[in-house]
Length: 228
Image 1 (cartoon, rainbow, N blue to C red):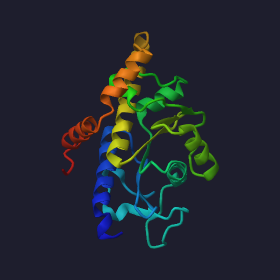
Image 2: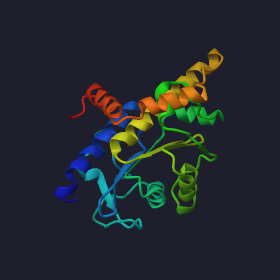
Image 3: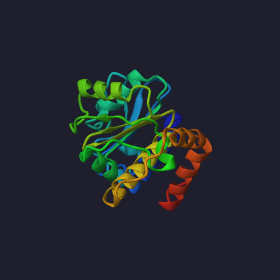
């Protein structure tokens, strides 16, 4: 770690804390950011997500190797590396195990837009396996499914969101979970209203804006009393 990475360290720690409090990340889950030199900074396998510190971060080389003096990276590091390899435009990746979207895929239900912000992640495919994304073969399959998209779900497992920075990747994960919660909660009532294609396109166009991502980020930072 160097002084040049300190701002990204702070943002990465805030991202993990915010997503843990919202419920996207629990005792597992991770967020990563791609550094200018191609290496990846990510929270370690053994880190306590709700009490993350700079000592819990690890910088990984593009080939997955790690200096022995650093903490152990998470078991699903392969997912992050595969996405960065496949998507040069991506600079941040979030992988979590949120309750509502996991319930949705456990029930075999597709992600459908039932809430305006739910349109922002775009088309959300489901990887048809709950297994850990801890090897290159599985990680590459998930990255291929994600394609040029912003988000994907893993059946009975979790989610992945990608973006140009940590703030946007975190907000996409929150929007994804908000939408999934509404889908699941509406199911006993006969199901949620599913937006038409025109309504999806309108919501996506109107809400895919940096100022609105920052508004969501700022709200949850204040709500959870995280450092500004």
